[in-house]
Image (cartoon, rainbow, N blue to C red; front, side, top):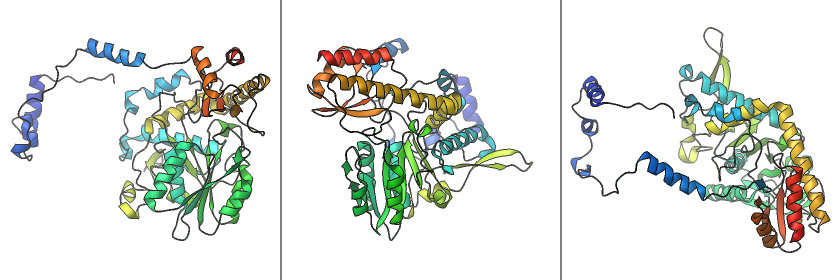
Length: 436
């Protein structure tokens, strides 16, 4: 924060006089005397700014930043235009407080509205919310949107991200609802198994596109199976991939969710990120969190307001459809600025470049014995066998300042390539693995 307001004793005195009290302690006069801390706590003396900065730099130096990254698994290293950090670094945006008073919050409300609009354009859906905590939370909230008195079971592809599955299981346990995993076959969700599992009690079916192994699912077929049984169809999508694949709306999705990290957020050792959610008109009143709508003021000028939902409806405990009352406003702002700066063509270019480099890496790895574990189309992630073991391969890459893929087990690795890696870097990684 650039603004720092220092107060002199005279300033403090004038403030106290203005509100009619003698000291700061009078602000807490309703607190019982025996609860006051009358002696200073036994804490070490404070450090100077220089000492604190030196210590924090020491902590930061322990982090390992690799020059080449070939790992994804839910968090992806994409190029972020400089304007993203420039805009979201402005003090006026550095608050998570709910913009209830529309008349003094038009800038924040418009930024959220623009974000929602871009999410709708990416997914093909009608309405989006102002984001939830992360992609896993979004998936769990989407499942809750589908449930009703007659239908309480949710089917989830076992090839969804493990973190998504973990959060969905927690939500289902807390709600006393059934969550069933749909098995995989040849690296994709088994459509025949889904047909066997879906029934009149199934509220929703969730499929990740691309799935955790990077494979492109037969999304339309899986959606048709869900709808034939009267269940809602949820798609959890990678927003960069969504720019070049068939839209979830065209695949029949009723609800679209996902992790927005690829849209302008750095890896950051784990966050904060944001979960996006979008749906159609039929379910928009079940969409959790905040929604910003466009209207006109008393003079007919374009204006923005929180719409459709009141915060209070989410704090009615067991009667609430959701208890989410907050959002990731600053991360959503980053996503909006990223999408605006890149434009549709820029995001498509990033997607196409990522896919092309991933396919190049797969071909080169196959040449040295790292065979793909599954056939079929993939986006920018894929699984290979590891001839000499995953641990040996990844250790060799680490010594060469390369963060290799994610070891799925002793003999399989999940690789990823984005537009951020060059052909020379990919060739260098393959050369290291060839030596192994």
